[in-house]
Length: 332
Image 1 (cartoon, one colour):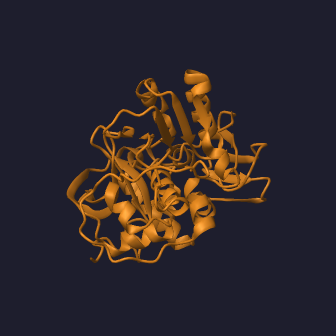
Image 2 (cartoon, rainbow, N blue to C red; image 1 turned 90 degrees about the vertical axis):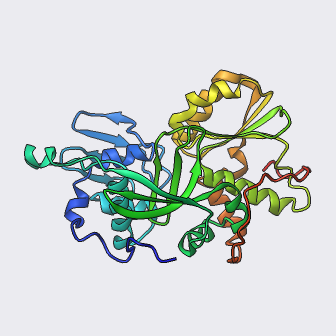
Image 3 (cartoon, one colour; image 1 turned 180 degrees about the horizontal axis):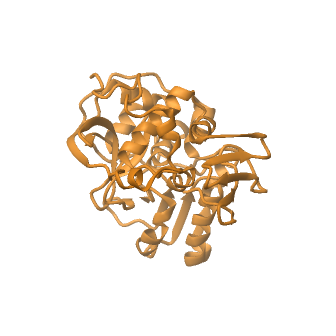
C-alpha cells in the first residue's frame, strides 16, 4: 500500500521557519514534560534526552529557543526533536509537520495579531478502520521490536484526514472509542481521550498498569520470549493509561484489585504517576519498572535485550485474547 501523503518531502506550505514558530513549551507538554521551575518568560526543565537530576535545560518562551547547559547544546524546536527522537533534520520536520497538522494549531511568536487569528484548528476525520496491512506500519513495528501477530491482536489500521490531507497510522482503541495513533513520523490521538481497560473473562485479583500501548505490546512480546510455552498473559487484567495525565481516570477501576503492578516509564512523569497510584492503594502497588531500571521504558528494554523480530507476512487473522497458562518468570 502506498502512503497517500508523501513522507519523502515536507508540505510545500510548511517550511522550517513555519515549524519552528510552534511553541517548544507546548510541544514538551504534549509529551507530558513540564518545567521543574517557572520563571515567567522562561522555564527550567529536566533534559528530555539524557539523565538530568539537576534540571539544567532552559526554554525561553519569548524567543522560543532552548539550551541544555549540561550537554552544552541548544537551538530551535526542530533541533530539540532531532535530539529527543535521535533522527535527522528531515525526519524531525516530517514528524513535526504531521503532529502540528493533526494535533494542535500553530502558536505564533513575534508575529502580528492577524497572523495569530488566521491559525485555525485542524479538521480531523476518520476515513477508514481496518486490519493492519500497510507495509510501512509493519516496518515501524519491526523497528519497535513488536511482532506482527501480537500487534494485529490489539491494533487497527486507522485512515484519517487532517484538513482534507490523508494519513494512516497504527490505532489502539481506548474505552471511550478514541484511538492512540502511531507511525514512524507521528504520535498522537483521536478524541475522545481515555484509558484502555483489558479484562479477562474470569475475575482477576491483579492488574498491570502501562503508560502506553507500545509498552503493553512489549510486555506481551517479552512474556512470550521468557515463557514461550506458558506466558501467562491471561492471569491478570490490564490498564493502559495512554497518558500519565489519565491516572485519575484509572484509580476507580483499580479499586477491586488486590495487587497492582506499575510498568511505567523511568522518568519524572512516570515516577509521579506511580506515586499517585501508590498513595491511593498503598501496599497493594508494586513498582515493576525496577525490572528495566536502566532503560527509558519497557519497549526500550525489549529492543536492547532481544533485538528486532524477523519481518513476517501478516495473515488476515481476527483479534483474539491470548489464553495460555502462566509460569514463573522474571516478573515481566
